[in-house]
Length: 585
Image 1 (tube, rainbow, N blue to C red):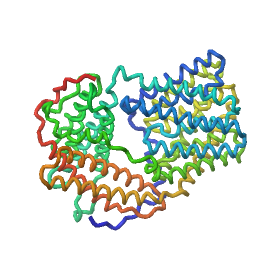
Image 2: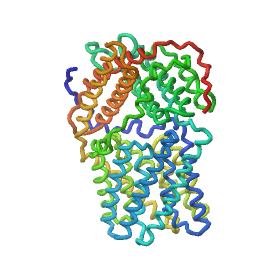
Image 3: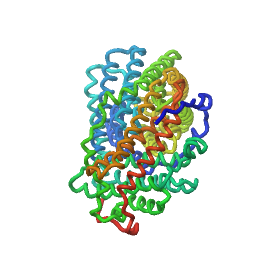
């Protein structure tokens, strides 16, 4: 495939648009799970400390309790491992912070250590794809611990409090497993089915044939130029991303044993989602949605219409379980610019706060750390959301503070209510969750004693503005020049995956599992290509991206992927969508 002439990206001025930045989205389907988990993890330690008259120690228990916010979308076996690593990572950051605080009270040193910790936490969370809330909670915890007066003799006891609360948070996160052990994988499969249905509807709405028959649902070269409608392209990218996420979830489950039966039943449904993406014009979206709806509850898993023994299309799935992810150091390499941005932005934000005489420079540091997304354009959007949410949260604190100051019990209850509100609202838009996070953070500072609300509000507002401004400027200054190279690498990887799949399709009957593995590799390469291209398109000052080459690689890749899916799923559905596998959750 010849390389097309690179085209210039959108100008930075246009990327500073405010359109849609504050728009509310539909809430997450499981918004209540992290919200309830947060309250369940925070309430017992705080209430126990309240009863003992040691609410001043709540900062350390909350460090462990907030680990309950992570890994809600993962199967329980994977969730157990992820939560354990989050707790250990939290303890590591807190240990560094407490030891540093016990050795020096030099504010410049403390800010520097906090910025370096924030950079490490950002890089590790992104490399391991730990998921929301990412590095922000860990950075908030370690940065706050840096500015609490400490002695070396107190460090073990405070770490023990954090570890105990972290263990409780692990139990809270795992608590739903006995009630609905297959909930995460059922939800992931349902999301894939719904995304495939949305793509089929989008194709019909734009008069496209999707990836069926001779085209790919896109304009061919020479027929008005490469490209496709935003709705059509967005729905297809979302569909393949949801299918890829569903496969990753299912492949984290055991291939044998009691849970394997459920896994294989769900695999058939994910294959059906892939078939729908390959031939949307021949897809019944309502049937996909009916299957997805049936997965929401605890009933039997819907059948696809295939006989239980027809598992040819699943050959090669188990082989992927032995695949190892890229080494951590290799995954960290592309994140170097983001880590550098984080370190520089957090340090400069903290120093600026110190220069202004603010008593809590870690607020500016955390604000800067919360901004950094995959590219500068997304970082700008997050900066706007952070400022709007924090300033609105300061006003909410002014309304809540008189009630909270009536007694420590009310102080704890207000914090719990805000904790629930933050997690319940943040999936609608980041700024809306910040409206609750900000007063909660202000109230936590009063666990050791009430403070003048006016001073707290002024300091928080100033630190928010300083952190957002300095943090965003650091993102602009530290350019990610590797973004263009990563796009080239992603295009090359997609081309190679397509060629491998095409050779298997053109040759005689492949070795069992070979075509399935090639197809899965091509789907993953195309998903990575789209994510890499989107991320690079939001960077500034870099060289022009080969946008036409990306589009052509996607067109060819999706045509080949569609043919591979049709080859492996040639049996038509032969049953009504109401039939179910005899599999209970």
